[in-house]
Every structure is written in structure tokens, then in C-alpha cells.
Length: 181
Image 1 (cartoon, rainbow, N blue to C red):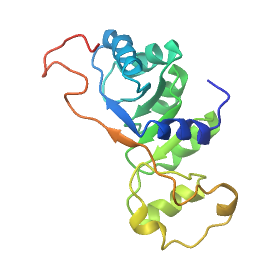
Image 2 (image 1 turned 180 degrees about the vertical axis):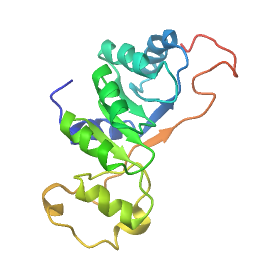
Image 3 (image 1 turned 60 degrees about the horizontal axis):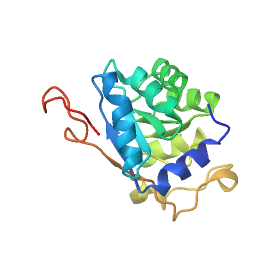
Image 4 (image 1 turned 90 degrees about the vertical axis):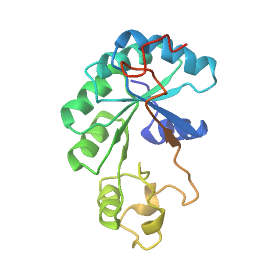
């Protein structure tokens, strides 16, 4: 794992403007996909933990050293351990799981928990989160400042990177397997 702080990792991801969200059923596609992303000027990817190939795909992509790789659809502490152990620099969770957020903090991995309600935003902030997977703008301005917010809160103008996914981004069995590059 790099010495970059979680905040720096998220800043790097945000610089690209969007993060491709990919589902890889076959680890043999990982290196070709990473190469295509680099060649296309978008060296970042969120590999979802929805397939058995996710952990090894992250490992292959991260080993290249030229792609910022994260893990998505992370639901459990075990998945956090496996993702970060494979080289994921950031973790995206569909919801606000205190255990997932805390484990990411212990491992020094950036984490983007999914939040929708003011309660979830407040819980995430209490757990040290300053950026969110969901769009928290509707409730952000109505929250009281929490202790410590001034120390590590992100500027309100900070825009999270947009995440882009879909069945056509990385062809799978339904779309017909082919070389991603």
C-alpha cells in the first residue's frame, strides 16, 4: 500500500472526473482492461466485489502500478481485508456500514460509504468520513457541525468523482467475451 493518505487518494480519483465501475467475471480480462484505461487517459477503476474474480482482478490491476484501483460493492470487513490486501486504494460501499468504515480506517484505505439520509451522513461523519458515495447535497447544509468537523471536513465545494458503470463497459458472458483493449 502506498503512503498516500485516504484524502489524497480520493483527490487523485476526483481529478479524473469519473471512475469507471467494472464487473470482471474473468481475471484474465483485468490487465487488458487496465491497459485500455491507461491508454485512454483514465487510469482509475472501481472493481466490484460481485464476482469471484474481483480480488484477483484488483491484484492484477494494482500490480501494474499505473492504475488507481478501488473495490466496489464492499459489504463486509472480510471483503475490506481482501480488497485492501489485493491492492485496492479505496473502498466503495453501497451503504453506511460502521464496521466497513472503521476497518478501512484501520488499514489506511479511503472509503466512500453510500449515504442518502441525514442520519447516514451524520453517522459517516462521526466515523471520520469526509466524502460520500451518495449525493449528500440535499441534507448536507441542514446538518449541525459535529465535533472535529473543522479539523477534517472537506470543503463544501468539493465534488466527488462521478462513477460510471454498466453492462457494456466490460463485456461479460451476456455481452460476448472479447478483448477489452
